[in-house]
Image 1 (cartoon, one colour):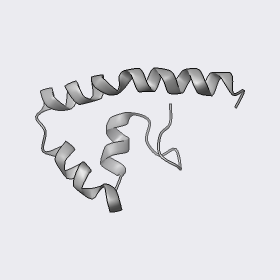
Image 2: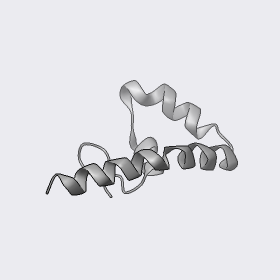
Image 3: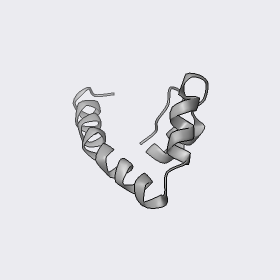
Image 4: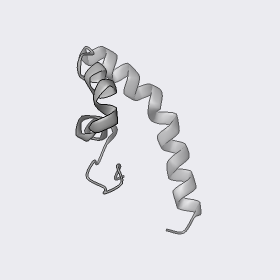
Length: 61
């Protein structure tokens, strides 16, 4: 799976770390989390990744 508008990120963590501009505050908050907190956050996003995969697979892209 590739994320971001240009496909630079191959996972959620990379997408967060590569973001900038308006996302700087959110990125700083993410980077200040402990490894356990980061893991919990990423795991909470997994259902959204599954939905995205289902939608993309049904679009014949």
